[in-house]
Length: 115
Image (tube, rainbow, N blue to C red):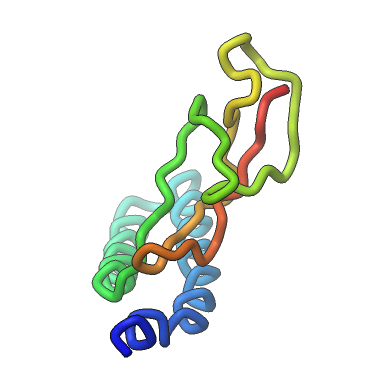
């Protein structure tokens, strides 16, 4: 029963991910060309939104360039020649953030791997 309650809002949480993505894109754009107070305002709303989702169990899948590729958390969308020897078979770039709801991955991190 507890398990059901924990994951009952999975669909809603997945739907919210596109809003998080839009916020992140907006913040990048405003940072390029907008004014400081607009940026601060949007960042505050984004943080509040993200914190609310975190309180409900949403966690970012932490992934960085150089990490081992892990099929449990990552989806390789493309593979490029490794820019360096140590990036062969490793993650070169993260294209889209992945998320977990409690311990369950609800969106894999979309990554580029080196070959």
